[in-house]
Length: 183
Image (cartoon, rainbow, N blue to C red; front, top):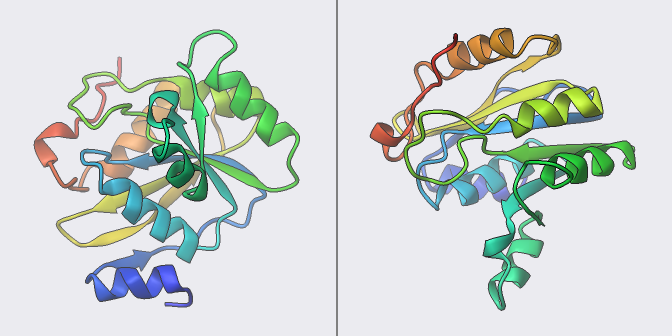
């Protein structure tokens, strides 16, 4: 481990697996997100991987004094993902940065969801950036990178690849992590 974040993960019994791809910009999906503590492990993991990132977080989490913690955490508040909200905000951030990786949990809240929020896909399409698939596995005590999807033209193809990468990953509350069925 090369950073304080990596040493903290190691002390907690976790391993960082994989390398972040050598790309300047991406939408990075992070799953499973089944417990609040996932955000801490994710922050430690992306920091250890040397990623220049911003986490997208629901604006409801930015109340005083939590807003101070969230900003230090690398989070930015966003509204929903419809219209000119989080999608356009993320695309503008990516378009105006030399290097930036937007990290998002497409499951949304930490509860069980049947259908992932498609905002991450729309962000990647509009910004014309690849999708990096990051993960957190409580059973194996791993945080890391599963792969990168460069060809993002077809949503069903992207989701099939994401499902394949996450099929053996176990969240803190595994019953809450559902891979979306593909039409």
